[in-house]
Image 1 (cartoon, rainbow, N blue to C red):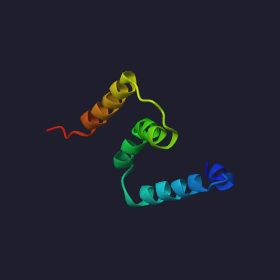
Image 2: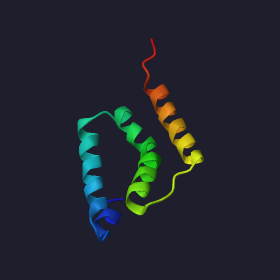
Image 3: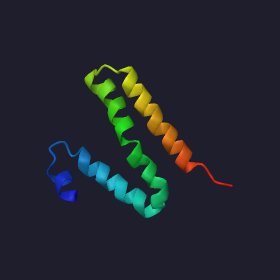
Image 4: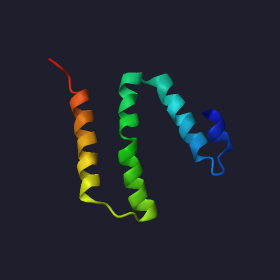
Length: 78
């Protein structure tokens, strides 16, 4: 995994890996798993901003489904 970050031309993957491992040291894994589930949502947001992709109703629906599932999973059970 680190090999791919080191050989990447722009180096941003390496920086992202460093941030991820630093976060793993300082936070619980159960709190960090939220970011893994949000990766598709971030990918869509950045593709709209950086690449000018067109967003569809289906994309909005599935992003809302992901965010709703995460909020439901993170809810404290009494």
